[in-house]
Image (cartoon, rainbow, N blue to C red; front, side):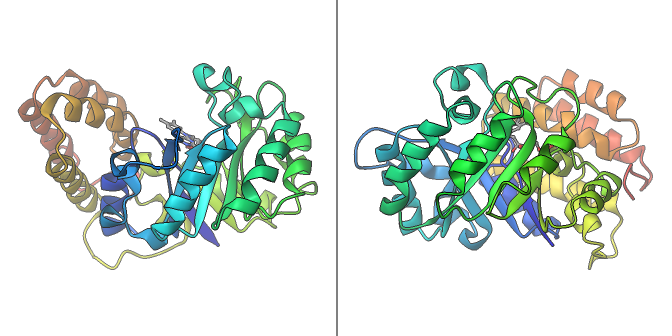
Amino acid sequence: MKLILAPLRGHTDFVFRNTLLRHFSGLDACCAPFITTVKGKTVRDSHIRDVLPKYNKVRCVIPQIISKDPDEFIVLANRLHALGYGTVNWNLGCPYPMVVSKKRGAGMLPHPEIISDFLAAVIPNVTCAIDVKMRLGKDDPVESAGVLAVLNDFPIQNVIIHPRTAKQMYEGTVDLDSFERCLPISRHPVVYNGDITDVKSFKIIANRFRTIDTFMIGRGVLMNPSLAEQVKGITPSSSKKYSERLYRFHEDLVRGYQEFGSDEEPLLGRLKQLWCFLSFSLLRPEETLRKIQRANTLDDYWAEVESAFETLDGKTAHR
Ligand SMILES: Cc1cc2nc3c(=O)[nH]c(=O)nc-3n(C[C@H](O)[C@H](O)[C@H](O)COP(=O)(O)O)c2cc1C
């Protein structure tokens, strides 16, 4: 069984991915947040900074591209392959209205003919393998049937399905019945992605879909960075308590962001966003989050984080 970290733009950049892989095990790969394509034949290093090999374990990372322009996609995908990436993921799932209205991301899902033309232009001209990450549809889960039928015509490596429509955004529950209907349609290996937040929710999905052997997890890992090792039943090599490991992970993460030039204000902003998820690792998530959200300086922030960990006395929500 394989576990892949889902791309979460604003969270799972190279600093996060590297820190996570240093402190916790269980993940086989990380899909990086999407990169947009650019006009022309060259892609500047600054545009693909997040996946530059000097910052990444290239073996463990799958870069993701969002685009509806085949020529631009080819240039970027081949550049990424030249950097050592064997697989590139194509984003057909982004639900944000500004993206969808331009027929990009999940905005392509009601138009299998556009997807077919795109892949017909791209596949013969790229040197790497292509994965597709999609939702069930833009407005209607039945859209997935047409998309999967088109994908069957091309040598796609894996199809990752998040069983929601774009209209749903992240609301409501995952539509497992519609996901089940996708399985016999796709001739490609299907990866499940969505709402795996603990071992229990993983088991429900894994027991229902026994032919699936790869799962992608996003927010669950932000809530509990040890989730992948728990799902795989890995006993941590260190005898340190989870609370201690979590503290060290967070400390290392902040240090990493500072090292890569995050100023105080943007750094505070992104750490507060992280705690919207990470607070679920602690015993009183709402109270912890409220206090951390109040911090106006990094010193205040650290004071709140220290106090949240001190009151734990080694106990957390997960271990
Ligand atoms: C803040 C945020 C950023 C995201 N960024 C991306 C992205 O860059 N590319 C992508 O394919 N999906 C993105 N997603 C979707 C996730 O990869 C994933 O499909 C979704 O969160 C469902 O999985 P989960 O329940 O395990 O988190 C994002 C989701 C969130 C909440």
